Image (tube, rainbow, N blue to C red):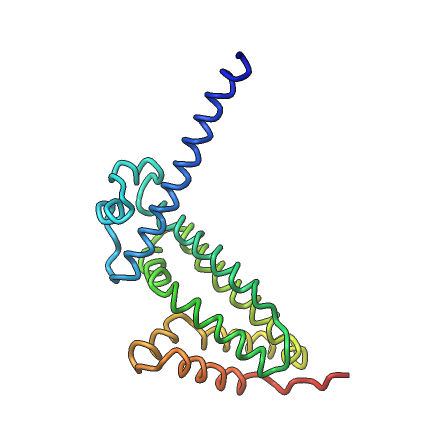
Length: 208
């Protein structure tokens, strides 16, 4: 009886902890959904309503909306990283171009609203500025891995310049201009990026 009684409080504690984690996740997802629907930064009341909780519940999990933005950014980075990891660099030049651009396009399509909110709200926040740097560094590492055969032909300076040129080309706002301003379909926007990257890259070395 004593062992059973001792286990009950622990089980209740674990249950409350799991519910709290689930509530926190639903609040993050509500914030992201609202961003996708409107360029306006969501209010605590709107986030709480979409998540199905009270405003008090929002601030029980996050000290303020800035903390929520940071948590949402970390969640998005984790999700994007997992998706990218599912598409390792393999195949010939054309295959790697297609794999890279399609995945990059899907990431931009899904996370553009958050990226805009992140840049608009970075202000004096070292946390948000750090997340922006991390995103760009991840993109550069992805480029270096995806196009290593071609980049291996270049010296350090030219290699760095080529990578940075491609990183600027495939920026979130570049994708937004093609899709929103110029009305390109997903496939058309991908084709534009593929051709542009192909021209920036040196020749692929022959397979020995």
